[in-house]
Image (cartoon, rainbow, N blue to C red):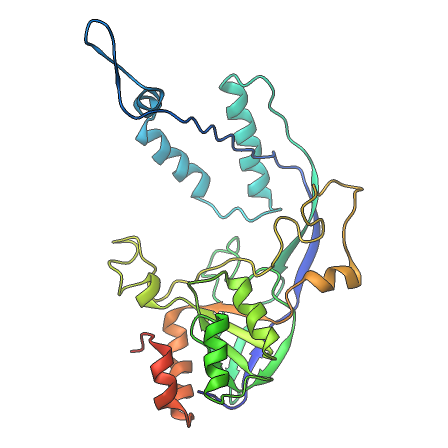
Length: 306
């Protein structure tokens, strides 16, 4: 399932060292192992368990209002709004009477787009990320995707799992130098990109299929919980936990930070772009129109089209 010469453009992203002045949002999760069965007192009255007391204390309206407050404006990491929200959490926790509430400064490596990416076919733009009219909203992108401009044939790789790629090899589909069209699900998006890279592929287009997380599952937003066909799943594609430059260590200013060749060894190796289901349909149609393996590949795909 290939499409000749689909240009896949990733304009440079800013990998910036951000000195975070925001509060360290440390969520204290206290796991209390209790027997759910209520105990009986001598006079036969039920004694509430700790879980019952905690549940009785929770106010769902407070949760609703907190979510509205913290989610009503974009607040990407390293931005002014994120700093303001961190300071608000700090203020609230102090007002709740916690003994010691403080913030730490961290110097972390962030991946942010400086220009929009796009996908072209025969000189015509097939997809270009939109940020609507709000300049505070960052256009959809996969953080830490490699900065690159690639051009080549496209191959549909299902979920991008090892077994999916091995199946394509078994079907004698050449993956080397090709761009993967891949749906979200089953495994981490960064693993999809790494699997494709290890098979010699040069880029990846990610989308959410309605049968996995959209209209085929139920009502979509705002009427339900599922992703609409115009929705895009964001997220990073790095394979390490935490700050990529200080893997498993605190990103303190003046501390150790990987850079140069060392950082390149752990950074994602191919460009990856997420797009809506609505925008993947024309690409799938082009793939099928130019494919010599559509019958065999259809057995593998099991994805929603049309």
